Each structure stands twice: as structure tokens, then as C-alpha cells.
Amino acid sequence: MNRGLPVVMVLAAATCGGCGYSTERPFRSGIKTVHVEMLESREFRRELEFQLTEALVKRIEMDTPYKIAPLRTADTLFSGEILEVRQRVFGDDFDTGLAREKGATVIMRFRWKDLRTGRILVERERFPYSVEYIPPVGETFTKGMVRGLDNMAEAIVETMESSW
Image 1 (tube, rainbow, N blue to C red):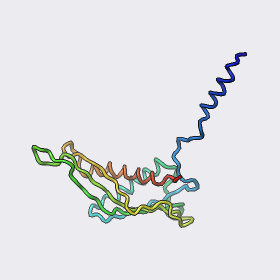
Image 2: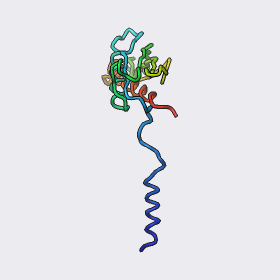
Image 3: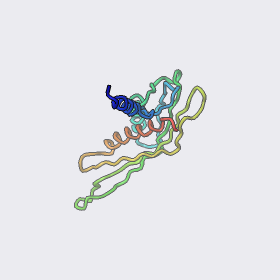
């Protein structure tokens, strides 16, 4: 019998076992369902709250173990409001004077509440998210916002992970 074989087997078992780390995201246990209320908006651009609500529902379904449910059967409730949208120009084209790159920041507030206990799980009074878009290559405010609102929904879902 080869004496080096047991040592190799022990080393292989130790390296394969790891240190108890997981690749799963740390979402709260005990929660199975979320009801997402239609977001409200203080902005004159009325379609943004619909787009962000839809993006948030899709992100919750894709990125979390939670299921979307009606209010009467949901474990938790997500509600929020778009407070404002700020636009800005980053740089002008020297020849035409037109904007080369623009940006927008969406600021919202939201609350995630456990309906069974009444406990607030996550609350943000001012949650900003910024996106840039480039008009000379055909990106409009609307196209930039579609991308930005999806990324904002992803950032919101990240806040739903349990804190250590």
C-alpha cells in the first residue's frame, strides 16, 4: 500500500469541503412572498412609476427566492414613490454645441414591511440611482431610463438581502 495515498485523500477532502461558504445570496429566511404595490410618482413623467414597478417585480422573481403574491396572501409588502428625476449634461460637442453625453438621476423612497409582524425590513427615505446615455449614438432619455430603471430595480433587490 502506498503511504502517500491517505495524505492525498485527506488534502483532497479538506480542499473540496471548503470553509462553509455558499454562493447563494443571503436573503431572509421565513419569507416566501412579496406584494409590490404600484409605485407612486411626484414627477410629471408619469410612465416612470409603471416601468420601475414592472422592473422591480421582474427582478424579485428572477433574483430572489420570493414569489410575487396578492396583498391578501403576501408575507411582505413593498411600497414606494419616485420623488424626483434630475437630468444633466456631461459634455458638449465642440463643433455642434450639442450634448455628447447626458445623465439622469432618479431619487425614490421605499419601504419593505413584514405584514405578519408589522416590522419594517428595509426603509430608504432617499434612494438615488444614476444612469448615463449618449444622444449622438441614438440613446434617448427614454432608452436610458429603461436601462437605468432596470438597474435601479436590481439595486433595490440587493437591499432586500439580509444584513449580517
